[in-house]
Length: 638
Image (tube, rainbow, N blue to C red):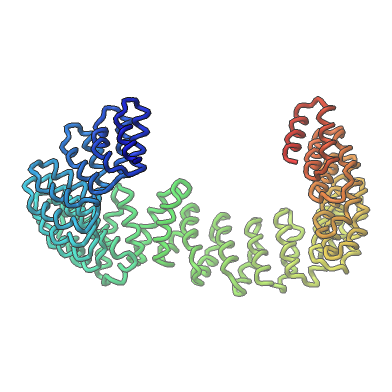
């Protein structure tokens, strides 16, 4: 009944009603509407045409296919193309009707149908298309048949494609392309047999296809072709195919003599202007495994900007690594040009070979600063106890901060307690980052000599030395050093008191109540930096004891320094519970605008009726539009 109503609506002239009826025909799969929809497919009205196409696809079925077939002869190319597109999707519903058209006297119909069948990709259509490929009198039809067989991709087409290799060149191109798409190893024999029987372009396509198929058995034949071909273009194609087929297996497949011969062909390809060909050659040189190829690859590496083309750079680098540690890389690492030497050492640094490490150590003192940095970092990363002497020498002689830090890090890595005095000597180095690294390693080694050195530093007049000593004893975390750290708490220099507070906190980080008694007096320190650091430490270490710091944090709201008031507000916003909200509300009237903003945000985090009311009253009373906007946004989230 529904379809009858739809058919009635399809007779309407009102476009909106007609479009609705067209779509309904598709939704209800009204087969009775197929003839009307096919007629509408030929309409000049694109909207109706598109609607009819959508519905015909939905209705589907053999009746739709049969109704669309006549449109393949339509004089309007756009109508023909729509019909072809639909049939490519639903043609499998009525293959018999389509296959029958392969006998049409109209060449174009045969081409259209061959194209459609290729999209359907059913094995049923392979034999009809093979028959078309081998027997149709028109070269364009045969060419389309070959294309369609390739699109279908069934190996059953191999035999007829093989026979079609003797067709005209136009068809040969499509036949070879079909072999490439099917990728059946059995086709390799036919393609090899046909090499040399067609044009150079045909040979090129065959070689390319053999490379894609990837059958190892073809390699000996292709290798021999390298000697036969006078064409540079064909030699490149053969080289590319062999590299694609064998990859890492090249060095196991070729004899030593063949490897050296293939090396020359790869070098020839490396000189080509085309980067893709160069890259094939570079990969092949890496796979080949001959150390002498390092020179060719390394020279290409120098031409590539790593930052501009990192992927290509890494590919070339990977090929070099395949060739292992060799004399050529040694030679380049010794190059007087530091930039070239750095590139070589960049490659060598990828090896975990003890011989590489020993070589780099042996050239260390002959190279410039940047290379020495690279070498010292490498030896630190891969080194062991046997490299201690090298780094002792470095620490005694070198002046560069980065190199020294690598040496210090190494001593920490192997826990070289017998080098404690040497490491501790860098606690007084002029470079802050070196002092910091030395202190880090001293904490790891923690010998009596190191402790004595740190204690002596706490008693120095020089602020930097005193601070280093206090920080170091704090990091050691032993309460027995408290008496030396405590001297720093009374120091007249705020910087010293600041680090002393933190050092004490390290000693008592697991005893919060004792920590409170030790450092809360410094919330009243005359230095705002000391007060701020103390407040930060209390909150950081409070964990489950946040209720015990509330009174101290609330008291900090009255601090004369705005940053301490802001930090106190941040902490209260995180704690949220048990807070004296009135104290926070009072800061809405703070003289500093940043404090006001933080007070607004904190009330938003605390929440509750009192916070909401305070913010509403604040908005009413002030005239600063920025503060009003911030408060309103906070209220929206509450």
